[in-house]
Amino acid sequence: MYTKKIQSSRWSPIVSLIALFGMVLLSLWNTGAAVSAEVPKGEHGAAEMEYQSRLLNRLQPSVDVSKTPAGFDSVIWQAFIPQDNALMPERVSLGRKLYFDKRLSADGTVSCATCHDVTRGFTDQLAVSEGIKEQFGHRNAPTTLNVALLQTVFLDGRSPTLEHQAKMPITNPIEMGMPDGQAAVNAIKNDAEYQAAFQKAYRRQVNYDDIGRAIAAFERTLIFMDSPFRRFLNGDENAISSEANQGWVLYNEKGRCVTCHPMNPSNPLGNRQSFS
Ligand code: HEC
Ligand code: HEC
Image (cartoon, rainbow, N blue to C red; front, side):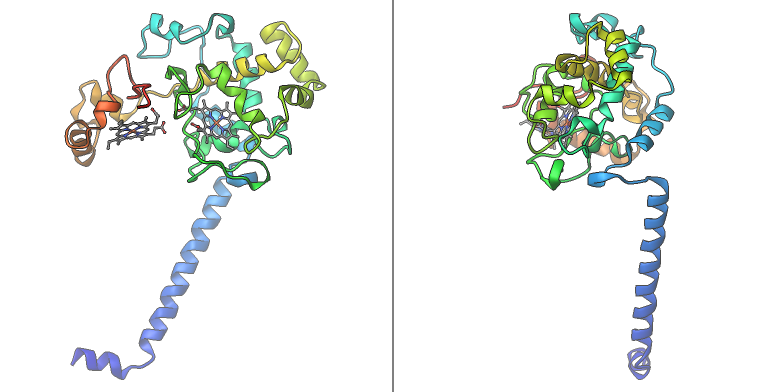
C-alpha cells in the first residue's frame, strides 16, 4: 500500500532530491561564508598572517618570560634553554615577528605560520605540507605548541635544538626555498625595524644564527599545558568524557601506546624521544 503510494507519485522523489540538493548547497554556502568571514585565508590555505597574529594576542595576552611556566619545575625548565639564548622579551618579540614574516621565503608567500598556523592548532591540517610554488613535502606539520619541551626536534629527532631547527625550513627547497641563510638575511636586513630589533635582542646586526635564536625564543613562549586531559591526569576524574576515559584505558592497555608515549610529569607530552 505504502510503496504503491510512492510509486504513484512519480515526481515526489525527484522533487525531494532537488530540495535536498538545494538544502545541502545552501548549508555549504552558509558554512563557507561563515568560515571565510571568520578566518580570512591567505596563500597556501593558511589564515592571513595579520589575523593569526591578532588571534595569538587573544590566546596569550602577555607572557612573563622571567617566570617558569605554570606547572613546571624551574630547574627542568631552565635546562631546556640554551646558555646563549636566555629568554628575554626583546628576543621573543623579534622571533614572533620573524615567525609570521613571509619575506623569509624565496617567493614571499610562506612563513613558519603558513604551516604552523595559529588558527589550525599551529599545524597545517594537511596530509603533507605545502611550501613555495605549490610543492608538497612528505610529512605534515606537527604543532609548534609546547615544542619547548622536546628533547629532540622533528618527527625523526634529527634536529637537536629549536635554534638549529628554525633555520632549516628557510633553506629547505620545498618549504621556504631560500638558497642559503644569507639570502634570508638579505631579505630583511635593510628594514630599519629589524635592524633595531636585532640590536636590542642580541646586540648584533641582522644575521642568520640570531634569526634561528629569536624564533626559538618565541617558540618557548608557546606553552599551552592547561587542558582537560592535564586536569584529569592531576586527579580530576570528571575532567574528560567517558569516551575519552575509555580511550585512556586503551592507550595504556590494549593499544600499547604507552610503551612509546609514556605520560608522566617529566615527560608531559608523552614523547619518549626514541625513534625505534
Ligand atoms: C612548508 C611547510 C612548513 C614551513 C614553512 C615550516 N614548517 Fe616546520 N614543519 C613542517 C613539517 C612537515 C615538519 C615535520 C618534518 C619532519 O619531522 O621531518 C615540521 C616540523 C617542525 C618542528 C618540529 C616539531 C616536532 O614535533 O618535532 C618545528 C619546531 C617547526 N617545524 C618549526 C618551524 C619554524 C620555526 C618554521 C619557520 C622558520 C617552520 N617550521 C616552517 C612544515 C613546515
Ligand atoms: C613503537 C613505538 C610507538 C607506538 C607503540 C606508538 N607510537 Fe605514536 N609515535 C611514535 C613515534 C616514533 C612518533 C613520531 C615521533 C614523535 O612525535 O615522537 C609518533 C607520533 C605519534 C603522534 C604524533 C605526534 C605529533 O607530534 O604530531 C601521535 C598523535 C601518536 N604517535 C599517537 C599514538 C597512539 C594513539 C598510539 C597507540 C595506538 C601510538 N602512537 C603508538 C612511536 C610509537
